[in-house]
Length: 490
Image (cartoon, rainbow, N blue to C red; front, side, top):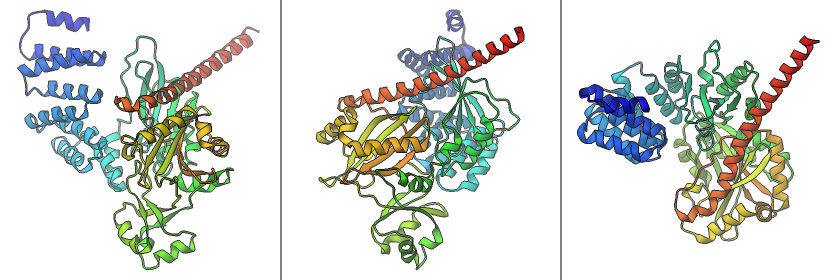
């Protein structure tokens, strides 16, 4: 920063001076001086409103601050004036993909590849779009092109003390733990490794700990297998052993967690699409113990996408037509409605063996997600959630608390979550239990102030777990070194 400020203090003109101003503005953002950075970019763009670098860096700043709509507008302006620059298309596409606007994102990734057929990030992004749309073969081809030689990337570190160095393992096709809430870039220097496309001969970046963020057993089997091999090359501790993650698929969980006292799991079966669209579909389901209503789900999707309720056999064929994938999951419907007719979905997080309440979502709809629930407009629902966050055992009861402990022990994961409802007799109705659960912070609205303590507690627990694992490994290494030195001296 001092070097840039010295350059800016000297009389200069032209493109070289402008590049220095842009670099200075971007560095202000990197140092978290947000208002100064925004003011600097706005000043530059008043004078040079079509400069691509200024627009692109300003968009990146806004996106990093969570101002996604504003960032999209700035990237769109960059594309308007520089339609053949692939980076503008890729940056806008990345934000559109995050917003689940897949067709718009795809158009921009394809535009980037028309401008630069070898653009790695465009291939990576287009692969993600195709994977999410169910075109796994097409996705693999783009991932191969996008991650060849680009399977390792380093995130910026902004701390003032020596960082804790971390390897974060991810899968190319999604199904990863959202780590942004707790991997603070003032504490951790993170190297992200796309496990399923890493060259086995490539050296691993320096690290004190491995965080396996590959969380979806139904979607990420190749990446989890690659992670097992990768971890074997390191002596450092691991959070979320891939072998434990591989046991958390929906079918596996439904079978093994049914043995946990107090847990009711839904009958779950993978069925070929052509069976479900054939004339004997209803009979096939009945023969395998299913009754209507039942749930159908395309494996590997989250946040309720490609997940539907089928009320009657007559609706089955039409319902299947709207779901991607050659095999679909048929899932028994567990009724989690309370006396008021609203469905309830509780979420707890399991961090280093401890169970923490995260949220309760209440909805008139059977498909309960916090962001689509009735919580914002119902003070009594928020009061019920507050009671859960403040005293989880009192709300759930002894039977469900014992069930949660049993699930935790069966999963054997350092980081995981459980989504569940409660039966009329206190049984835990299991919806999902795996590592892909997100810890989402509420928006600044005062209505959500009561949730923040629980969320901060969980994030602090994750950070503490990572620190303790890394410190334990360091202590063990020092002891081993000391023993070796003693033997040498003897």
